[in-house]
Length: 200
Image (tube, rainbow, N blue to C red):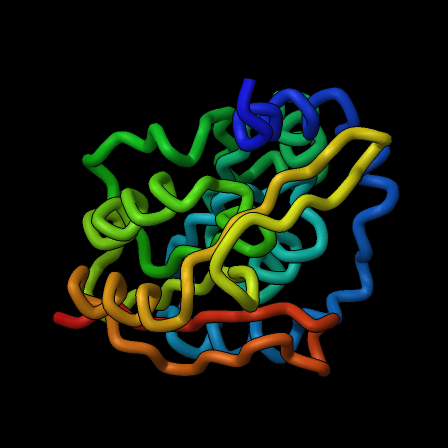
């Protein structure tokens, strides 16, 4: 089994440990504020790879947005349902999202980069058909093209990234303009962040 195919099982096996270890101090707040400024009041945000719902979805909910969270881990989605029962939580692989719904914003924070390069490329048309005009799209990526292996729970943890030019091309080709992009943001734990907006 390829390392990227192990992601879903890994997060389910270590769901409770992930929830306990996931930082809840919202060091991502400046980026969340930029994203939120582009979402209309009471807009519906799609959180891809929402984990246990904290801290990202929790902050969006506090801001008055409605959240639809998607994660492949049944256990993590269970935590979301316990914490925020008024929102919609779906157990699903983000690569298998059906058409038919659109959102006022999409966020894939520290989740999108677990997809292999081919699957990442295939997601951009999905982002487009799930977004209403004006909707922001925010995701984190790697800071260089290629595969980087991490570790969680004693197991290898797969990450991959395209290069900056290809992300730009994919966003543009699918109707997004880049609003802000920082590689290894020192104010956000070294995250490489993309914030784009769907054009009308």
